[in-house]
Structure formats: structure tokens, C-alpha cells
Length: 274
Length: 358
Image (cartoon, rainbow over all chains, first blue to last red):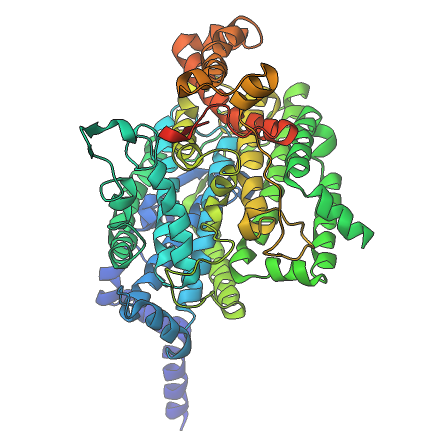
């Protein structure tokens, strides 16, 4: 009986969560994934930053003043996180959405009415609005702390392009629901391209670009036509915006983000007083 | 009722923009009076109070609670908050500099901490909070979906996506080729030029106002007044036919606003000289051309000799002329606004035959 009691005790001990955790951490599978193990010493805390592909975006050590919320406002990080959330929810939305005049609107309506737990479009839309605001505030913070000054001039420029790309991503996405709000917002926005100097058929100077009676810049060859793939916001515009929104612009933005983050490190980390 | 009419009246663009610009400039002149914890508390209490009482008004509620406008209400609070926050930090640092003490940031610059856990955990918490906020927001508020697209019936007002409403608001004062193409292009170019124009080595990596008064004033005027305020104006206060509507006013499609705008050429040829307009558009608009060319070509050298002499000396001719061109392009908007409000001026140069209107 005593033996059984001891055996029970031993078994119970061996199966306690702490011990199970240890078994797992000592297993070959776990060690193959997480080389360092639980970062419980400073040495391991450094190694984990070096060994993990996601964490190695960061340096091992950072200035205390540089990571204060009251200094960074966390806006760059929030922007990046929102970009990731938008990529994820956008991917899910692509399962349900077909960019044609026939299906675009009904697919969006079905997302709301038929798809279980259908808040992906909400997360995507509100996340997109939030990202625009977060990018503005990030730029605001970088300006107010003078962080664009040497040696970070180039990274500020990359940031400005990323800001423009964020607006373009949001703009191209605005058309996709294909409702009255979408089509008319894009019509108002893209009408501006008609007035591009020299390159829009209602822009100054375009009337000069003609040979005899043949005008080079008309409503079928101007900037707006290039943007919409047609003379009005129609099927071609929908497809064009869809491809730009889902593939073209995110690729460019991702590429530039890699440069942006890399340059933060190369230019001496988060800015601070010298 | 009287209060509502009063607020409807003072939110008219000419008053709102002027008052905001004056408030901004005065507050930057006396930052230690305006950007304190106490003043912040008072302003934000007033803003929340205003919003809380105003949503009782049905017309106000209709516009503010429109699903797509909710983030802009958020921005209406976030941007002033961060403005106040940044300038309060700046005031604190400026005081420290004056007293010869190290900056707030400097006290911890030498301190290096391990990224794991100090930064990684902050990021994790931030991500969790943001996820919760996003999901909560998405469950509470449905994304808008209107009638299916119908190319033959345009809604009134037709508005661009909200972040471009500053540009759409500019259309009141400038033609599309300027408001929709040239100015957005110049905004991007101007932002990218900032680090190369601003050669002031001070204020790198900490909040300060006194060491960078000129840069900060210029940027805040552009960002807060000419961008954020115009976005808000375009979102909440522009209704059918892009007419102005006060926050408690019903968006009546039939509201008429008399168009009495007059071109500069008519002012001079018809009213000034008492002649008819010349046939040749170049001669007709000759005064407009002179004004615009003078604005961009004569003012920079004049500034280099007088008001901005110190900039000309420190920046050198190229930087100085790029800077003054961008500055003059930026101030062209408030100048045109004031001319419109005071004199009903439509175009300085008006050649609609060639779509060349300024």
C-alpha cells in the first residue's frame, strides 16, 4: 500500500504542469524550433533576439529613452501591426469576393448576411481608417522630435512614400464594395486626373499637344483613362483597383517597409538626443 | 436655439479657419501658457462636453454617427491631443534647457535596456489592446454598404474618401489642376524636401519648440490648419452642392448660395478702368500674370534681403529658393481663401479656354 502511495505521489509530481513544461522544453522537437529556450537569463534574452527571425528586426539592446511611449507614441508599430491585420483579413475577404460588376456588390452583401462571424470586412475597413490616422500621427511624431534630421533624411523620404502608398491602398480599396458610396467617391477622386497639366484632357496645356486637328490628349488617352482603364468608373476600373489593392500596392509597400525598418537600425536606431 | 445658431454661424469656413489659424499662432507664441496639463484638461473637457451635448441634436447626430465618419470624430480628438502632448513635452524640455538641466530624453539616453523584455512586452501589450479595440469596434459598428453602384444617379453631395476631403475643400478656391494635381504633388515633394531644407542641427531626437520655432510653426500650420482642419470641414460641414452647413443645420438640398465671384481681370478692366474685357486672353489676363509671376519671382529675393535674411545666409541660394517656392505655394491657399472671403475673387488668372485658371 505504501508503495502504491509513493508511486501515486511520484506520478502526480511527474505530471505536474511545471514538469510537463520541462519535458516539452527538453524534447528534440521543441529544441529544434526554439534554440534558446525560456529567456530567463540576460544571455538567453540576447540570444533570443538574435535567433528569432521576427525579433531580429530589433537590436539586442535599446536606449531606454527611445522606447518610452511618451516619446514614440507607438504609432509606427501600430501602423505596422494594422498593416499585418489588414493583410490577414484582406486575404480572408479574397475568398469571398469576385471583382466583377455582376458579383462584387452581392459578394459584399453576402459577407454581411451569409458568412458566419462576418466581421472581417468591418475589421478590414475600420483597420484601414485607423491605419491612415496612425500613419499621419507617426509622421507627426517624427517631425515633432526632429527625427528626420541627419542621418535619417533618407528614411523620412521612404516614410513619405509609404504614407502616400497607404492613402493609395485605402483609395483603391474604397471602390471594391461597388456601392453608391464607392463608385462616386472614386469618380470624384479620379476626376482630378482629368485636369493633370498636359496629361489630362481638361488640364492646362493639353490643347497644345496636337498635330493639325488630331489632339494627342483626349478623354481616351489621358491620365484619367490610364487610372480607370476607361472613360468612367466601370468594370475595367474595378479590376484595375482590385489588382492594385490586393497585389501591386501591398508588394511595393512591403518592399519599402523592409527598407524603412532596415534603415532605422542602420541609421542608429530610434532617434534620441545626442 | 440662440446658442445653436451662434455655433452654426461661427463654424462658417471663413471664421473657423481664421480663428483656428490665429489660435495656433498665438498658442505657439506663448506655449507655456497654452500647453500645460491644466489647459489640456480644460480643452478636452470642453470638447467632450460639446460632443456629448451636441449629439442630442438630430442633425448633428446624423452626420457624426455616420459609420464612416466615426474614425474622423476619433481623429478630431487624437490630433489635438497629440499636438497638446508634443508641445507640452517641448515646453518642459525648453524650460530644462533654459535652466541648464539635461533634457527629459537625455536622462535615459545612456541607459541601454534589453529589448527582451522591455520593448517586446510593450509591443505585445500594444498588439493585444489594439486587437481588442478593433474587434470591439467591428462588432459595435457595421461597415457601411449603400445601394448598388448606379452610374446614372450621383448622390448629392458626392464626396471623395475622407482623407482626400482636404483636397476637395481646396476645390472651392482652386481649379482641379491645382487642387487635385499640382498641390498634392507639391505636398509630397515638400514633405520629402524637409530634411534637406532644414539644416538646423538642433532639436534632433527630442521634443523642443524654442530651438525649432520656425520649422514647427510652418509644419503645424500646414498640417493642422491646411490639412486636418480642411478634412474635418469637408467631412462634417459640407453638405449638398458642397455648400456650407453648420453642425446643427439640416442638409437641405435646396439651400442656395449666391455665386457672385468675380475675376481679377473684370475687377481691373471693367470696374477699375471702365473698359470692356479685351478679346485676347493674354492681354485680358496680363495683370493676373504679373501678380502670379511677381508672387513667385519677386518675393523670394525680397525676403532674402529682409525678413529671411538669416536663412539666406545659412541655407545658401539653392536651399533658400526651394524653401521659399514651397512656402509661397503653401501660403497661396490661405491667400486665395482670404481674397475670396473679402473680395469674392474667383480667378487671378482666368483662361477657361485653355483650362488655365489660378
